[in-house]
Amino acid sequence: MQLDLIHTPLRLNADASRVVVRPFHIPVDPANPAAGRVGRIVRQVLALDDVHAEAELALVLRDFEARHWQTRNMFNKRYGQIELALGLDGMRISPVKQQLIGAYFCHEYSYAAAALMNPSIVPHPDQSGLSAGSQRVILSLRAVGEGHISSIAFREGILSPGMQFELAPEPPFCTTATLEPGDPEPNGRVQIHRQQDSTISGTLIFPITPAQSNGLEDLRLVQFTHDDGRVEWIGTYTAYDGRSIRSEFLRTYDFRAFHMEAIEGSAARNKGMALFPRTIGGQYMMIGRQDGENLFLITSDRIDHWDEGELLLTPRYPWEMVQIGNCGAPIELDEGWLLLTHGVGAMRKYSIGAVLLDKQDPSKIIGRTVQPLLSAADEDREGYVPNVVYTCGALRHGDLLFMPYGVADSSVAFAFVPIPTLLETMA
Image: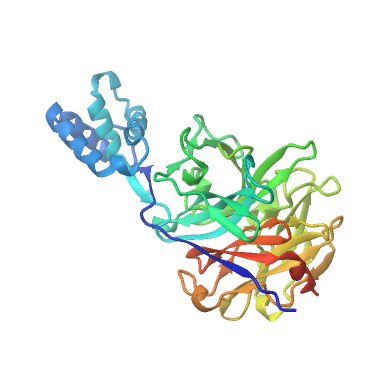
């Protein structure tokens, strides 16, 4: 049976105009903080007379204040960090010079200049005020900027009957979620908050800890229902420090406060882990790839600790012969657990397929697609990494599967898949 996807005309692309203010880090020698470049810059700013200092700050604000949210406040925060590092006496430094010092240690970062890709999608915590058959959603996106560093961006939208999807307007400013004061906990757990007046669509989560320093990659979000009825949004992502990787959690109840923490256990050495949206038989379950080519079912008594799993799926068809992996959290249907997969074939061409797992025992495979749902073709072949289609999660919408997907590691497209027809194509 032929499976026809219904594509929407919407496409999200890399956008160099989307910028945030980031700290510009210059090393400070803890043994002699006043020496070196940081100390020299501060001394030169302090040596300016008030007229020149005001003129220089006015130039900076002319160029950047309209491009960012609460620019002066950001300069003040950065000054506070420099004051602490150098042991400055803030009572003796004018507010103008404090802001100017802060500005010298900030920079603009174009967080999606190189690519926007590999989305996942979940129901929004706020479903109020919608018409029947509609649901509000949150889309997560992997945004890639200077230095090929990946961060997490979000967009809000509404799915309506009749295969209609509309994104909420993107706010003019984007701000980074801020770290709570204090050192990370022993397992690397940190708490961050989005800015008080910022929307979810205007929030960026940038690498914070040393383990994340070169990127937060491929967030797989799921709306998770705990055994006691609590609903939490949990995402697995790959933390990359430039040499090694590990899997970590992003956890939130409201998309305002987030916890980021390392996943414990031997399974966390791999990327691409996807959490089931609830426990099954009292066990937490994940789908992951532990050997670079096959899919495994991993079970645990604890949500934060994952060890070796049970082999679940191996490559069978030509389009997935090189390796297979998951494409996000399993989706619960009456018929079983629908798991989207990706397969790599000849010429490293990526395709998206699907598997149906038993609802009570997900180690049992009910069926799988012989042919892929979606493969790179025509204009979808071209981009930063050609011949790749990839998703980190889809969403059930009535009898449809709504699937955002990355195209050639460069942009994001959207498609609807009729679930009954999809199940009929499985063997």
